[in-house]
Amino acid sequence: MIAIEISEPGPVDVLKPSERPVPDPASRQVVIQVAAAGVNRPDVMQRRGLYPPPAGASDIPGLEVAGVIRAIGDRVEDLKIGDRVCALVSGGGYAEYCLASADLCLPIPEGFDFVQAAALPETFFTVWNNLFDRARLQCGETLLVHGGSGGIGTTAIQLAKAFGAKVIVTAGNAEKCRFCERLGADAAIDYTTQDFVEEIEKLTAGNGVEVILDIIGGDYFPRNLKALANEGRLVQIAIQNGAKSEINLWAVMQKRLTITGSTLRAREDSFKAGIAERLRQRVWPLLANKTIEPVIDSIFPLAEAAAAHALMESSQHLGKIILTV
Image (tube, rainbow, N blue to C red; front, side):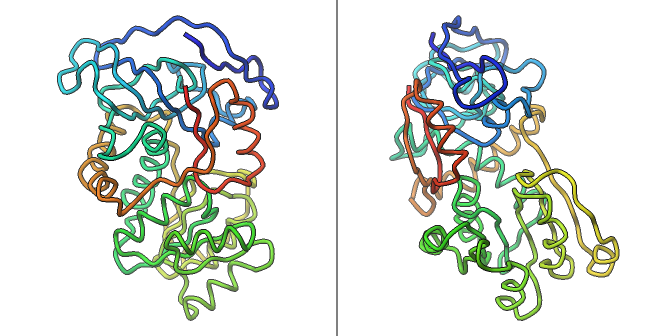
């Protein structure tokens, strides 16, 4: 099979096509003939040498795929050859065939094509786990999402609104802000011209927001603490501005804040299977009736994975970037 491998850590041109054997499924695994695969920032980090795959995972990048099951391992009883599925994987998505845990395969929602389905697993698993499982976002609360126009942001806006939260986002220009508002955000802050702490102060009448979903880190951390309400929860899921910052412990104590964060890729399949089941029950019906829809910015053929990464790094995209096979 053809796969896109990382020849060495570096810029986009280290992504090279290569011939690899079609994988064989182990117990509780399936082999998916990939029709489409999502491109995500962890793929970019892996390409740069900053995010190695966990032990036992494929070195081929790609954390989400959609396609047709072509082989089934032992102890797989709830899936069959020919099923159309999308799946969260720990690696291997940029290829014609990909191994996946049977527990992390979800049916393609009714009316969805493979491209739309490939845009679902990574962001929906991540957002659900962090907003609802970890941050306990409730109906009527206010959520601040940093980076509202990307794959995580567009998913967070729609999920939070679907479950009754108010949503404020930050984005990098006026066009992206208006895009987020059209998608359902109650307010959008252009971080290049506005101070989000000051804007949150105005938008919440000085109360702050109950939950912040942050992909930025670095110098955003102390500002996030200022923007949180009493009993607020900060969830850190990426660190685009760096891993280190200073913390005002008095602010944490005084406002009774909760600071948490997570990465999903290295978690055991049994943990991720629980998220898959919650998505199947709570979110997949919303996708089927079009209450929520993935936002697709661009589609590239697999051979142009380098161009897809270049677009991701430019931050000019609105929503998801997809590779087709």
